[in-house]
Length: 131
Image: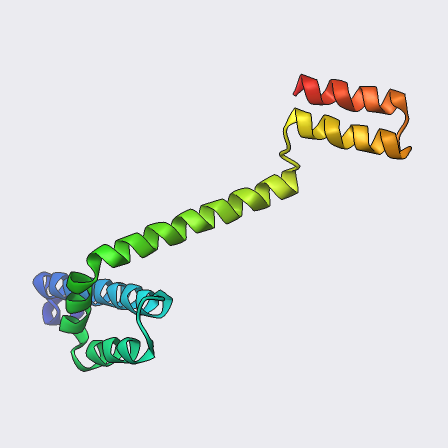
């Protein structure tokens, strides 16, 4: 029977070891991603960090996280802010999130070009002011 050959404490121990391995893999990917994302060090320094991570698998990750924790945090926050700004610009571009003044100015330019007539300009103006 499998229950007698694999007691409950061994199951917990296996789960603990698996969890520790997954956490280590996650930290390794974070460290490697940060190393390649860095612009303040050159190729040799990046290579040296990768060698440390490969030669000293667990301690290398811990050494990197201890040595570069502040820079890692700053680079991560900067990347998140850039992603948020890019997403915000994308949403504004897709949704046409311009202000009412911008919408009226665009409609006025179209009216001056003769693309739309005065009635349509008034309708766009009313719609912009209502929003």
